[in-house]
Amino acid sequence: MALEQDIANLIQSTDALTAVVDNKAQQLDNQMAVFDTRIAKKEQDVDKFIQEAVPETRYVQDIFIGGSKDYFYPVWWRFPGNYAGTSKLTIARDYAWNSDTKPLDPNRPHQAGLLLELEGNAYAWDGDANFMQIKRFHERYNPTVSHLSFAAHCKSEKVDATLDSYGGGTDGSVGPWCRAFSGLYLRGGGLSYRIIKNWTGDVKYHDGADMNRRNIYETTSDTWSVRWYAEPIPFAERLAPTLSSIPYANHPYTPPTA
Image (tube, rainbow, N blue to C red; front, side, top):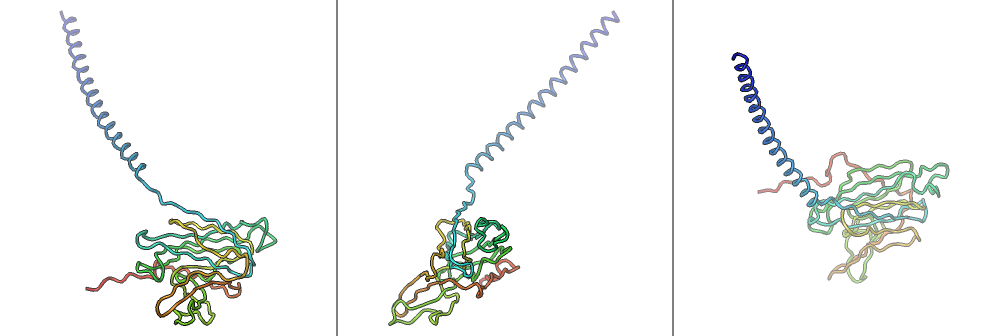
């Protein structure tokens, strides 16, 4: 009888242990089901984000400027207005580009490295934020950039000789007269450049095919008229960009008054 009782007790204990294990297994199954639901939800969230995410588009324009290495040639553009937020423009070149022709240094492939990153909004005549900020500027081996300005450096003349002139530059001087475009000058001589933007439309430029002027913009009102135009600038007159160490220092925020 004692043996039978021991066996009965063992069976009872085994059954109890089995019940405990089954209960724990059920709890684990329930927890795994919760985890599976959470993981499935996270996967759905990620898939939805990927479907709805719109990465910033990069528009790339490669240009080549011939002419003489002893001159800078005009390049001009117009940033979009407030509707596009802050627009970005990068002008760059790899240091070894054009190493096959060696237009600047005949003794090595290192010709000229350039990274110029700009942010801006609208143009000087617009009614929006109207600014341009140099974010990064780096040149190596040879200088390639001159006369960067929110109001493009150019010359000015009357469209209608009977009307007054608008702004400066009619004396033949080069200055930031153009109120309709931003601009700079890039070195010629057979150099390639890459322009990267986050808005559509090509940047306009003088390709160095000749030394003639390029008309940038003209307009006439009831009392005045103006035509802004740009010509190649000699290397000796280079005006290098100035990089501010304080972001947006040239366009500080002024709180509105009551």
